[in-house]
Length: 116
Image 1 (tube, rainbow, N blue to C red):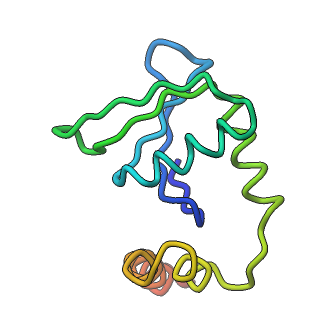
Image 2 (cartoon, rainbow, N blue to C red):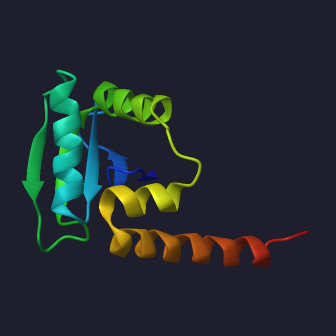
């Protein structure tokens, strides 16, 4: 699952040996730290962070599945913006917003290619 929030970009998969754990993979350390901070603020602290510089995602967080679900619920409950890319620019800077816009553009092209 890919998740884009104003905290960061997360790629989440089930842990291969523990179905109660998810692996939240991050390309930027700040994204991982933002998630760790949120989880810590909510007493969801059973987190292991791993630096994997030679892997496709440099940062990996091992998080109880229920804690990841709580983060996602909170992200939805705290939506306070009418435009995602603008909120990202305000909270994470224009460079990040430009990158997210590139993703938006690719998906807009996909939409055009798949019109009925």
